[in-house]
Length: 126
Ligand SMILES: [Zn+2]
Ligand SMILES: [Zn+2]
Image (tube, rainbow, N blue to C red; front, side, top):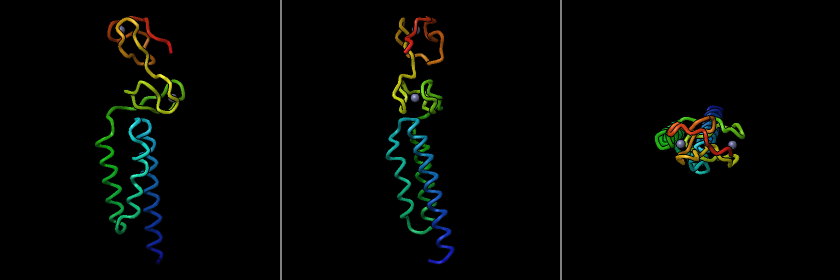
């Protein structure tokens, strides 16, 4: 193996590692098959040639962005980790991150003082 090949291999491993790290964090926060997504980029290491690896990584990344559950990330009120805003339970600490309105039984954001649907202040506290 010559020097260029070693440098390209290092770049390849760093890029793969970076994408694995990103996918792990983002997929875990969205509770979206994070185990699978974390390890899929490993295929890129075995792809033919340097360009092949980069293209494989780019395709995996694109596919992930297109298929992941849409919506922003919010902080879990219990453990402070970033989590998908539609989840009722935190994927890290497994605590409830939404309240329930005791009048209309709709889900209400954790920070809300009143139900945005019926205006009731009678919300669950846990
Ligand atoms: Zn949490
Ligand atoms: Zn309500």
